[in-house]
Image (cartoon, rainbow, N blue to C red):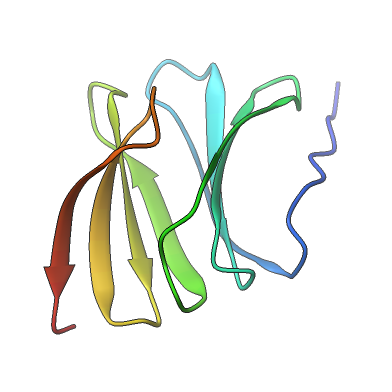
Length: 91
């Protein structure tokens, strides 16, 4: 069955499934990254970017999320706690 995931306040620009297929990550022009269950429940909201999020992906082990933003940063986050683990500037 299909599930609708609502929560972003502006258009969604990128989505990806976790390696195990149990979660979905989304990035939006609202500057947030959100993690959802595959059934459509919002699990996490990650804040930190100051520009729209253009791309998101899970790491191969599903433990981290990477996001790229119009704020010229690439950031790596914990997929469990939302903690920012790394920030790469200058893109």
